[in-house]
Image (cartoon, rainbow, N blue to C red; front, top):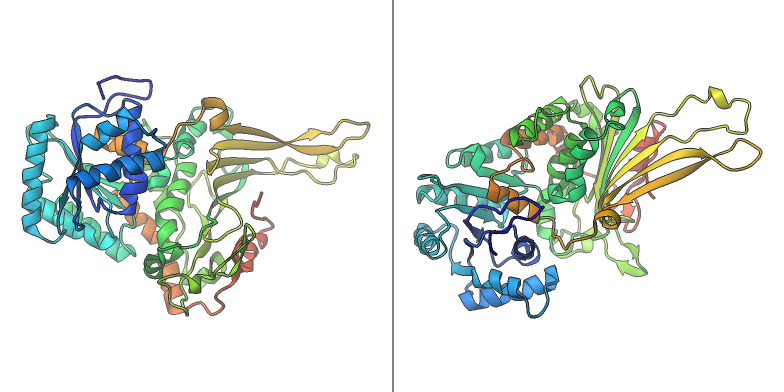
Length: 504
């Protein structure tokens, strides 16, 4: 890819991408297609190479053929594709054990060889596409072989996939282990949700539009809902889910990241730490849930069998690698509040779950109702609140509902909706959601990656809930049917406050 600079941004730095766990599903479905999309849009440098590292014995030629196949299947590349061949020709592979120091010595030698071949100026980033239990060991081995050492102007970075620990104590321990090898500006804790265009657009929407910025506070906003619902079950991730559960898997990272971007104060700039400073303040401002409040402010659920798209789907307890008597939650709803001047007394309702009625990730801003007094002598007996919805997936966009007079002799008010869809205005480009994040790592922009203090603050929010749920195992599981919107208790959580979940 010649050094062409397009409107999307500057060409990334020359570098080698090392993928630990390169034989796995993440590399197949996301990473290689994302690299192809970056190359296709001229954001990759000519001086670039990929080195896969995994325990599986795969020849280098087989790895390249798999790369071509994966890019065609998951990125939609045509059969005879020069860009696909360009990526495949720069893809290399070595078999190695994450715990074997000798294999990391071989890795070091291979990086020197590739650096000489592709003139990557000693720049390397390591992507840990592995199970969480391997993170510490890989980072330690990299440190022992000086594979993270930055000298003579080169850079070395490490991308770490979630989960970042399993509770507050383990997150602190993991951060401490990582910090012994890596500086914070070398550590990129990835949350693929932040690769979504609409998530990134939250800051532009809030701080770049004079019509919305003045009303983004407790005076005008009644409450906020953040929903991440999935139609799929746990699929083949039953073993992982049995260890993690929905609360650990989704709340400390995905949903709290969305919450922080929605509620943060304006940063002094869009520099990475300026943005993350404000996000961190939000996470630290979330009111701790007291143990005695967990039963009223937190809801858990587990799906039973049901019918979705006219097909029978099994209960969670019948899924592969799942204990038939499991008490692990597949649904979580929380009510949170922030101790801040802007958001005092505004409730935030979060929910996420598997096997729900609809696949949707959205942020719902419900504004306070206008006073009814003006309409007391008309047939209007109730005013519907204005609702702003930021749609993150599957259809990225923003919608706003408001009241308008229905034509006729009497004063009647009807709801109308203004819809913006990214695809309608800007077209669509094939994307896995990882393109922006990989590119940002290559140019050293950590804005969309979590910092150590943010990770620990997120775990602090859910720690009381984890403790109570561990002490009081669920007794009524399964408690929602596959294809529904979750357990009745989740509805009760919000209707007690005179509100209801958006289910459109």
